[in-house]
Structure formats: structure tokens, C-alpha cells
Image 1 (cartoon, rainbow, N blue to C red):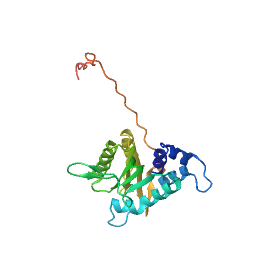
Image 2: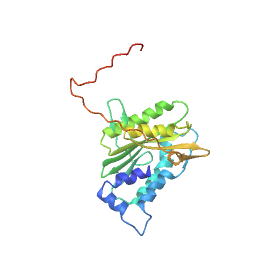
Image 3: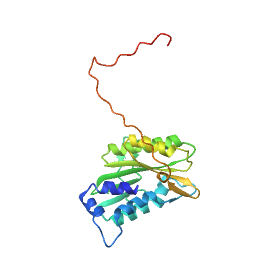
Image 4: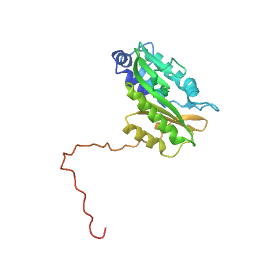
Length: 215
């Protein structure tokens, strides 16, 4: 997640200056951003839901990083911070749990979801679906932050592979003892082949093969 802050902020002129210029009065921004993604996190409290966890655990870390990066007019919004931009439909509204805004431009939007034993597929589908909605509303980068409280062997790698193909950012922390650890610290992310498509002119479509005798 911290690397995302560095990457998206560096897309702006002030961001590039803040991230690349050495400073004597504060530590380098890039290592500080990357440290967010490596650090262990506290477990959710009993009966704590995503908004409370985001405000209590995630937002302070992002806020500290933004303070050290010190990019003017790059602001934090979401749970435990200023209200994020609203994506409104006639029947409902969507708000990213963590959002970065630059001069009110929508830079980054993250959806935070717990993955438990029950309802696991619905939480994952909701996280991905809401991230896609944020992307449709001119966020420069969108992604999901998954807190896996019932880890399934090999699933973190499979999720990373899936969301990579959807061009979504992804950070997964899973329960290990009494803390949450970064899934990317263990194992290697799956590398999946990129599919390419080409248009076939009308009339040149491949014909179905006639079945051989005995098939």
C-alpha cells in the first residue's frame, strides 16, 4: 500500500520532487512508503468491522507517510479522515475506505474488506466490484486491501494473479498468531500469461474440425 502512495504521488510534479529530492530534515520518502507494506498490523478487535479497523489501524500509518512525504495539497480521505468522494447511483452510494486526493483530483481509491471463513467469496467479489466502480469515476489508481482472517493455502497468490489481470492494485495481510503479516513476504506471486487478441476478418474464421472416426 505504501508503494502505491509513492507511485501515484510521483506522477505529479510536486510528487516527483518530494520523492526524488534528498532531504536533510526527514527520512527518504520511498523507503518510508515501502515500509507501510512490510509492517505487521494489529488484528481487528472483537466485533470490529472494516470502517473501524481502517480508522484505527490503517489510516494512522498512511497519514504518517503523507506527513513525511510532505506534498502540498495531497490529502487523505476515508474512514477516520475527511469524507471521501461519493459515487452515487439512484438507489445507493459508494465511498472508498481510503482515498488520496490531489487538489481535489481523485488520485487513489482503496476498498478494505475482511476475508473470513463464511461469506468469503462475497467479500472478495464486493471488494473487486467496488474498486472497479471507483475506477469508473476517474480515480487514477484503484485497488483493494484484504485482511485475511482465515487464510487458505495458496489463495493469496491466486488473488494477486486475478487482480493483476484486472489491473487493480492489491495488498493482502493475513492472520499469523496474534498479528497480521504481509502476504507478499512469503512465497512468490504467480506469474500468469497475458492474453492477446486479434480481430479475424469476416470470412476467415477458423472452421471447426470434423471429428475423426471413433471420436
